[in-house]
Image (cartoon, rainbow over all chains, first blue to last red; front, side, top):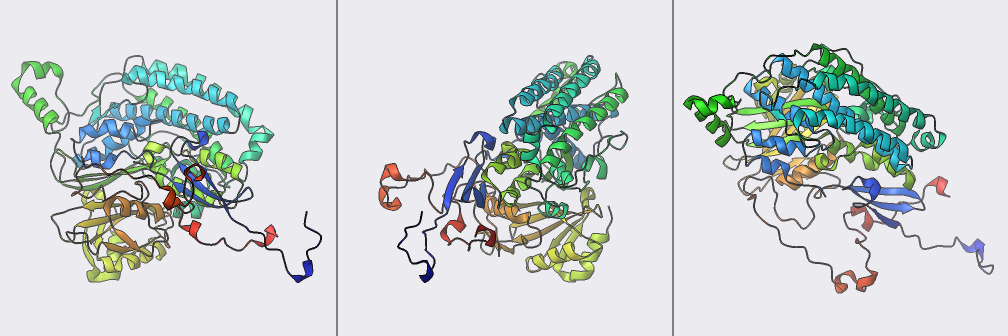
Length: 404
Length: 197
């Protein structure tokens, strides 16, 4: 109520208007651990949002310059910890590109199948987390149950649930287990059934749709100029998928589609991810079908691949080779190269500089999340505070990758 | 890969393109730092090139060379499906003169990447709208991805703000300062928009 004795004709009343600052994160439950957004609010509308990252910075690139090329594998596991296999394979392909190595066909199919399993787990985590943060806890639990099935397969294959460190330069740590194909064939229909059940719960739910539809839209041209890749870019209608545009491994021989959105809003990003789970299932089925039951997995290049253990213990040549590979590391030819693969969130690139020794001169990772998170502030400015949660969730920012 | 991009760059910029190579199939051009922005404009605007996706920007340090810091830009064209790597070398042994023009106005996605290169490698970008550290904290000393930065080096602790500095009793201090990490916090608010009434 205004006091009655103020003469309104003389001029407008100047109320002191100070922006309200709100600190969201880095310990906010919806901030996925490690992001802080400093918000300037006018009422509940966001005037400015300053996204700050770096809370999970661990000096990945500096650490890589201290060990051998092969010792980078455990580090890349910990970049994107929901789909470490894709990072492993991406790094292995980058080093193999520099060494001029092509791994045997069986290994290529194996890498594809494992990578797509990791992609399913990545998308399940992201889509489930969006639902959970909007209050729909049940689909999240179902999706985590489905993710557990993926991880069971990966555990059977690699021995570890999360940080596999399974990639090797010129091959994989182990050949596929005899049960691998059956495990995939059994688990995939079950996973897809869970995905569809959760999808039915969510995409016909008015409340859920209202929170996602037309929230945080971005046009294809804007998303491209921001450097976005992956599902977030495809949701805006740009059908750029490294697997289709520049096929690596055997992606040119399998039959799959690239789901593309139209409006580029949060709902599209959500639906594109669900669509990709189905495509990944198709790819795994074809890969498992075409992968040979026996044959070599590692290439036979003694410059990079460890000799068989039996030989190491019985012959001097293999002992020396093993010793040199472990102590000095595989020598990677001098030069620089950029290699890129499609990870769960988009183009995962490695820019490697070698000075010809067993230690990387420079390992630069191009994490897809970094630029996607860089575009967050323009998505939320001018919108309501509560829109941050679904918008941020749909970008699937992974702290380890974004903060290097 | 096609040589088209490198040919066009050489034709347009002549001697400012210092060297080119296509090792491992990656087309690479090293350009002089003073044409950095012009090269960016050209790569973005030329319809036959149309590099619309800024892929990556990073710094590679060669302390034995002069200039020592190599800034590497990777670009991709979604419509043409080709890539290029453009590099510029800046900075002397003490990192003096390690400056480049900012390309944020051409590709907004380079905003965070240029901040990261500044933070990690110590290259300054002229005309960047908001050049501050991104992965490290403001009090961090040095640039960790320079080869001269020892990997084991520890950083001094950042002291707490005192009551005098904050101008408030300790229990009334906000958990973050009004302009902490926010260069816009110091400026007055923009005028209210029409629909706010």
